Image 1 (cartoon, rainbow, N blue to C red):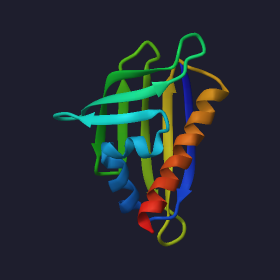
Image 2: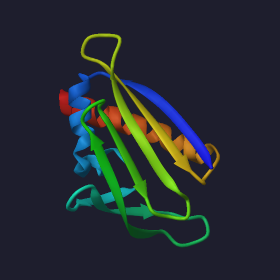
Image 3: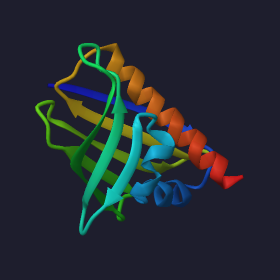
Image 4: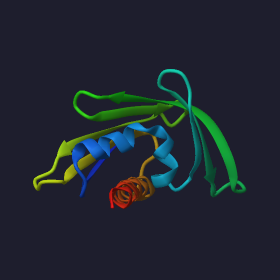
Length: 136
């Protein structure tokens, strides 16, 4: 198992970032491979992603997952059943400067290597860009 964690400062109030993240329909705006998200009753979601595996033709894949929004403490937890044991947590903290906040994302997966680290940074950057763009 591999554990990954990274953080980014976002120039919006923490409540604004948390509200944006808590709306799972925003996922495709900051997760480049996701093409659609359909929330269901409770924490369940169906996600579709466009992938380009090294050993197969590019394709769209659909899977079930769950996203649990924890209002107290401003965090989200998620998991997708797969052989990769993929799950994670995002936590929003107040920033050092007024009108900013700090987003930390932790991932747990069987995947290892620079590609996971790159995609984590890509997701953090995508969230920052998406929510700051909406804020303007």
